[in-house]
Image (cartoon, rainbow, N blue to C red; front, side, top):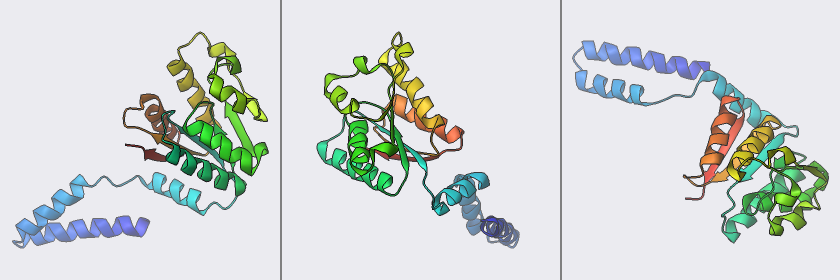
Length: 199
């Protein structure tokens, strides 16, 4: 990485040299391109490389929208199944859609490696989710958040989930404000974030 960044500095110097020699059009284009390209920070690249090279099990959070087509739910279920099968610990929340698919896949692979953190108490969860959640071995309830709105409780819950993970995988729409804010907060904490958009 250091060599690559150094190579770019050399290229810029050459571009300035060409400009002084009369090749102004080429040099200006080169300069404009370099200014418009936002290179990732060196520590971010190092962190992502380390995550890719890590061969041991990881703590992975998988979160996403409730409104997910059945075909996408199957893909998410397969992903969580594969992640847990490799020995990773999966953390998610309780809801229909993405999280329910993640729970289903992880439970099939190894229920001991799944942790589900609820934004409120189990009793406050939708009826269609409750039966599945009752089968989860490691279930964390947050009844003290019941005075909050579901959106507020979900945001608090997502922060707790992110604090427990090394990597976040998120499935969202471009207007999924709570989820996108969670991704932003995870990045600020130097977590590895993979974000998929349904739209």
